[in-house]
Length: 221
Image (cartoon, rainbow, N blue to C red; front, side):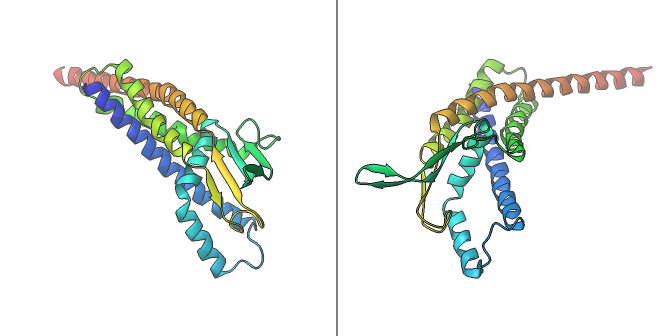
């Protein structure tokens, strides 16, 4: 139906906005880390080029991990190597509620702006672009699924094994979002804040109609 098609378009728009916002978040994170002196004194052009190649190669993994944190899902980070069928190395779980066994830094909570803006903008645009009176119960479920499903699939394949020296001085870095948690959280965010954006658009449309009627009445008098 037209409402379901509109919902799929809305979910795709939510996903694109979240992807662009997460990319901006990754770049900002890198800039802040470099400004705070995260790079070692021996950091040179070769290291910068190597870091750029790494970033391009693993950008989807890094972005979906950032979105996962923003949604409230957990991300495993640590040194994790499989040897003889056994997993060696410490692994910590990071989320907004548990930052590796500690409280998450205050600035991490700014990440919630990524899904919040994506879902509110998507719901708002869906109602503004809809023709007639579309069914909210058809549009929002389709939008939520179109937003959550690709995020969940990417998270399922985002288990990155990063080579020695790229993230940690020694060993291998393991970064893996929780795909089921990402899918469920994305569904809830898209449904709740998409609904908010939809209602905001409806309220604005009512104000526009009221203003138009007022202008017509003043013109008639």
